[in-house]
Length: 356
Image (cartoon, rainbow, N blue to C red; front, side, top):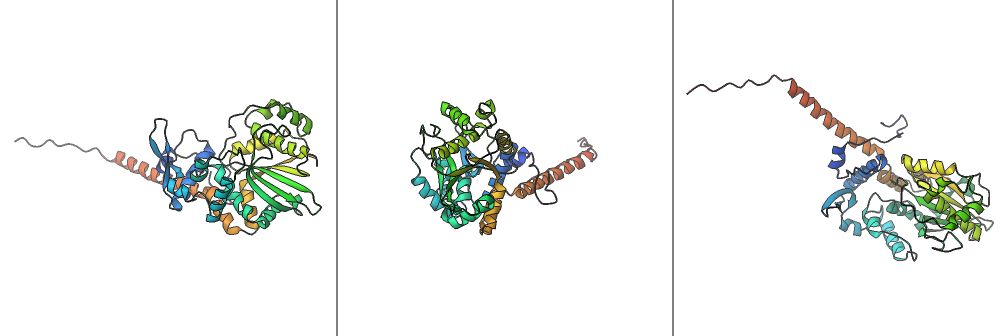
């Protein structure tokens, strides 16, 4: 569907195989959104003049993949939008928490991964807490008196701790804030880009059900839907936040789930999860599903409009995908018309050569 009168898209197209192969991004296993996002990353890579990366097939051969960058570019930090964010990311990786799972190959070389997206999205906020405060106040108007005190990546308040969820879950990004009254709060963030919310379900500890029952968060804390895809990861991280609040780590908290507006699988999961929740009280960790577009807009409104545009063109510029599709369809249409014209031409009559 082409953009509407407001210039936005209500859905993304099914891209022809020939177009995907042209840009080295054909993957039959991709969802509709992931296919468009993979093409967008390849288009962005080409616009930046970055060399294409490769992947190893099941047969062991190497093939080009347009949504990856070559090792030299990856090592140079080109998966990040500014040198400052690249430098900050390297330092965060070096000082990562014990037990933190950071796949460095994916972080530095995979354009499609939500891990570098998280650093690109929150890196400038980590480097400028005044900007972070303004963004948080725009996203959460009830925090207009709060000041952000710190931002961490791949953070857990206690991996494996029996006083929490006794598991190794962590937040993609974790923000702490303080109100003038002295009340301390947190925002635990899960960032998705192309995920279909079908990640493998880990062993569900008995502690999950214990927290779910005691928390008062859920209409039915024993619901099987909470324990299976596509909701189980959201449920587990919400329980982690609630356990932190119950333990007294903070006075208040919220869980922020971020995904692109047109990633309907992630958005549907967030909507279904919200239907499992009761109306939150001040004793609860609240749940907020926020479109990636809204976060980017808030960064622009908070004083970094140029950087917000960089984020938009990197991750959300579906007009570029639409233009690539139009160009591919135009070529296909021209080819079809030529074939039709050839078919209409009279057949050539072969004249036998005269006898010698």
